[in-house]
Image 1: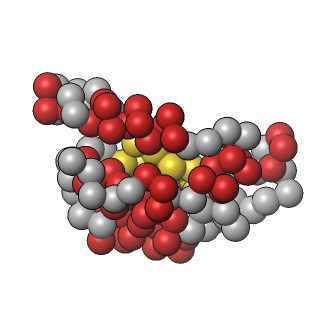
Image 2: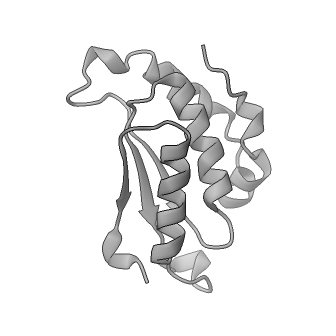
Length: 123
């Protein structure tokens, strides 16, 4: 059973970025995680977080990673570099430092399969 309460992951931020609550996202991740061991070599679930500067920091990633780790330490977690585009064109690209701090926070939460994606976008 998951020890990290989904309420501990900031709902307000998810609403600000997507317009909806993260409740369903967290429920669906927990549901898929229960079946993770059925096919670990080609996972049924892979979590990812877009590292939007000024919105998603290492603390936020750490909270998300704790939630994932409470489900299964081996669930793959991709931290995706952000590039300004469309509605968020006034924000900078994700920095290498930001990505490194987020990766360290995810690993500190206990996850063993963490990677930074879109590395070519890091500044």
